[in-house]
Length: 460
Figure 1 (cartoon, rainbow, N blue to C red):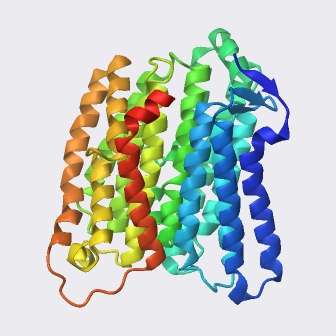
Figure 2 (cartoon, rainbow, N blue to C red):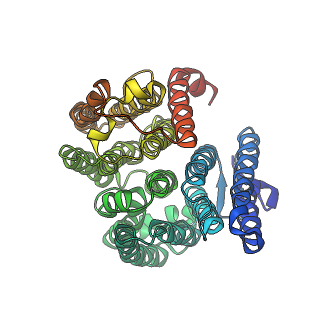
């Protein structure tokens, strides 16, 4: 049974992030340009504190805070995955934005977007969901155009316009669902939907999905992903293709499980199949590694939608989603860290990487094979659970589609892996140290998370 509570201490991880963002912004107003790196330290400290508090909170019973913020396993994983991924992104960004005139604002925008993402995945009220969507989105739009160059400006504009359009549709869906469900909190909606016109409920749900699928980078809201991934700074690309997805999938799962456990499996399953297939097909011909990773994230969104579609239909849906989303986060950040360390966007630029930087090359191989679902990486454990959820939820066809797509994805990942075994054409540039450290740490954690999957799932 879920307890009700209105103790601000229950939101301690979120308050740590908010406090770090405020302190970082205030300090940035008075620090000289050469000293703004201290804001990165403040933000990193807030994220570490948030991780520590979130870990402690995960050992406590489930409860509802302030009638809208659910603190349960979905929230615990969302908090830890978002805070951990954001911490890695802050480390990745520290080098490229060092001594930038807006260095402090860069870190603060990252933290504010991360804060909105956590709330997005934890809320059980439509009004808070909309507020969280805006908080997660607006800083990300600014980050996409942070470089103020032509590709970044174009990427930011596309990102904003698509987010605004689908956000308006989402608001329309919330309005419809509020009207027919006679409330905005999920338990009230679940009680109200059976007596409401099914057509209106379906229209409201589809409109609501538009906004959440945009944040998840899934079809049909995926068009921004390749442009932003290629045009934004690499650290920002790593952030927007990782962190917002965590909250989006958590929000999708929570809405489905708590309001429509039997009413949306087919719709989301079809979207999942289309998303993973389109992402893989588009990735086949990519020679730009950032665009390749962009379409890879689209295909991964399709796999992550499988347990979302099974919400309320099988007990495997929740562990499948939570384990997969954590595995995806660390793997995706690791892959982008290698791109940032090598500072090359073409596949040919990675020729001989294993000879020049063996540890960095091996880390990239671990991440790319992890996307496929190769043991003992973390994504392998997530995919096994995902297939189990689809089969247990009587959607064997979806499991078959996911298996075919997983096999097909081997081709374009190998196109990137094979050149690394060759000989470099010239003297390779020295990789960035900070990004290299993040890449190695992410690859190592992916293997540890995969090898310890049995222990972690048994403990949960």
